[in-house]
Length: 91
Image (tube, rainbow, N blue to C red; front, side, top):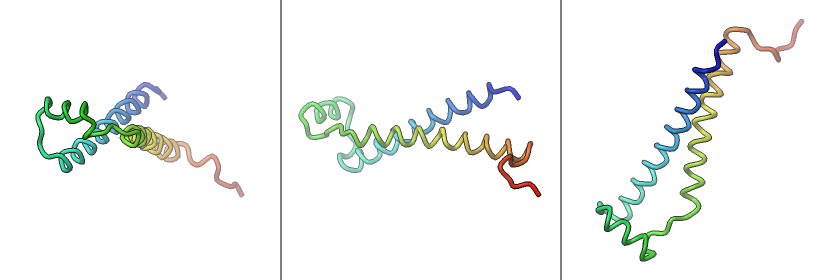
């Protein structure tokens, strides 16, 4: 079986996870600070009103890892449907 589709799917899923995390963080910031222009947002970050915390980074990493796990789940499910479960007890 050619591994290239699974490699590309995994990379795509990781980037989709990162995009979703960035979208959620942006929505939370917009809820807290309203619709700001890019210059206003940068000024608030520089002044310390908006703090870039490590929780944002961890959330992005968790979503990226979730994309990887989703593709791994699909790969495992497909492998079991094609070849059967190797860990199943034999009688």
